[in-house]
Amino acid sequence: MSASSLNVEELKAAHQGKDRFEMPDFYGIDDLLSEEHILIRNSVRDWVKRELSPVIENYAQEAAFPHHLIKGLAEIGAFGPQLPVEYGCGGLDYTAYGLIMQEIERGDSGIRSTASVQGSLVMYPIFKFGTEEQKRKFLPKLASGEMMGCFGLTEPDHGSNPAGMTTHFVEDGDDVILNGAKMWISNAPFADVAVVWAKNEEGKIKGIIVERGMEGFTTPETHNKWSLRASATGELVFDNVRVPKSNIFPEVSGLKGPLTCLNSARYGISWGALGAAMDCYDTALCYSKQRVQFGRPIAGFQLQQKKLAEMVTEITKAQLLVWRLGNLMNEGKATPAQISMAKRNNVEIALNIAREARQMLGGMGITGEFPIMRHMANLESVVTYEGTHDIHLLILGHEVTGENAFF
Image (cartoon, rainbow, N blue to C red; front, side, top):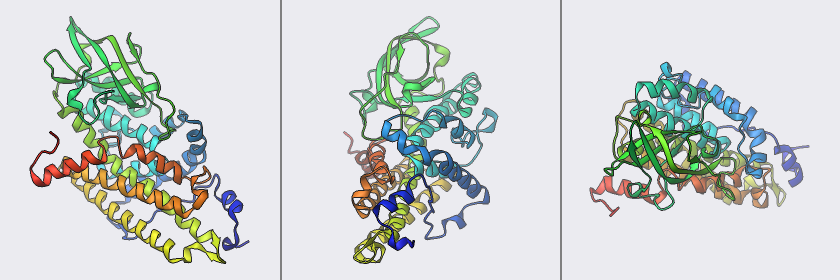
């Protein structure tokens, strides 16, 4: 039977359980990558095709996190790949880190979120701001997946305005007593450690490592999500939690700490969202070549070609954007505004591509036989977390005008 003669049910059967993804590379971006970069990317891609793609739809439908994938994520170096090998990490550059995030989010944004939180929001601040004792205690176990972490910044009443946080601690001998709550926290329900940002008695924001099992520390799970359904989300609740002072980051104070972490995470998201965009485009392209209407594949119709041409154009622009940003990160020259631009742009184009691809698949686009609707729903969270779309516009606006529009 030829591809052009496949009907809807046969298209479903042909796609189900199969991951035949081929990356669009219209401008030969691979020529700009090293052999090591390509080897790392392809290894992660193979893992996603073998381990993640066959199971992710079921986990998303059941709104459950696939815990069994944690070991595999650690084995492919997804946890802190850009951090030094002396702490059990990968010692890779930022381009390799981005490629890893791209491939994982091509599979699912929620699974990439797990890796991003672990590497950029838990391991990175411990490495950047922690004591040597903290690094030796936590980083190797986090890199291996033996321990999992989460990041506590957002509060019920303070999202885009983290400076207004009310979570706080007071000193009590060799300890501090922590009170407050955080919400919308990825990995919270199963995290062994939480990097929490709270105000001390002087009102200064400090980072503190809270460990599972500390009395008064609970992590209720968030249910009824329509987005990131395969990611575990929850709250962090602190009710007179006694934490040793040795768990406080000594090297940072104020919003610089959490915002530095967010820059690292936003960088990974800019690559990750591109992976989701690629998957939606590739799905729509393959479907259009097989789906027959009016006696021929819909790929032969002008409006469908317009959609595909626009998709691959935006993907190519985004590929060049993150490639250049990766070089700037490697050179230590990337600015927060440059990272902000990439995060905002690439998530926006991914959402637009997901929506157009969904239309190309018609009614099939909303089913779990194809990944598009899952990507689209996931990206509705990605466009909001780590700085909303509008906040990133204001960050860039401040950069180019010198005028602060936040207040």
